[in-house]
Length: 330
Image (cartoon, rainbow, N blue to C red; front, side, top):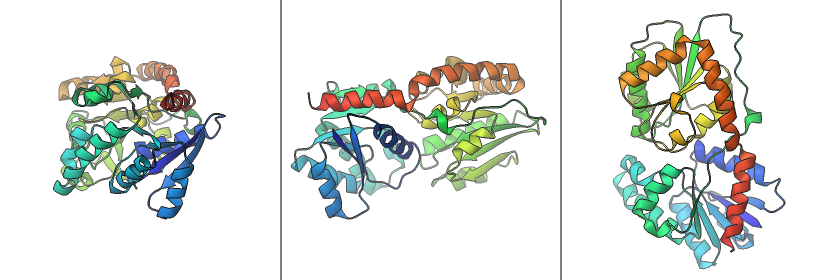
């Protein structure tokens, strides 16, 4: 079965990692022949790839991919769409012109795809409640992680320092303002040996970073070496007001890190309750103090995370995806 993945964006992060990992895993499948199409390249070459494919898989949306979607429909191709985020919520950070296209564009492609996949029950329930016409043509296929790419945690540090890592998309204010809450809570932790490294970039990065004066909080900007940052960290923190099923959390689990994460989106579907926190200063401070004060407690969380994350290994996710493709032709 020939599947063409359509890349329409320069966007990095979750969708990029998802695409690269899925294509790599499916290349070993006897049932699927994955192909990749970048819409920034020559259109005739992409049309040729489209004609040769049996299934077209979209996972991002902009004006380029929307046009390619329409061409796929004209050629009567089977189309599947993986929705990574809540476009109803994400439209707040779009310009007026983009807003006109954003929600209506997503609605159109979801309605006119043969099948739709969501990474979490949370996102599926939220979207289907507003688009009930999707109720009979969707499946939950979670994001995944490749543990072989990650370095496990070690407890042989000679100094007393404790490094906390957070990875944030600063293009969405509801995600970026989680860092403001994190900094407010961190003001109550006076230990000079504890510091926070924050990786990520976007239009709100400068505004957020300028408002935080604590010298123990370091903004690293855009980084391509998240695995290395994880390896050099002791705790992973993900405080946000908007998210779905972050691959960054799966990577932290597989790398052997204890985690503190906001109870938003589908995060509670991937983490035990001990590591999920409501977005208020009192609950967050309680979780923080507990996790940074005890190595034994961190080891307990790590052991459990390494067991839980196994169900998110890309090899297992790929099997669900193969079944998903086969159902398109049924």
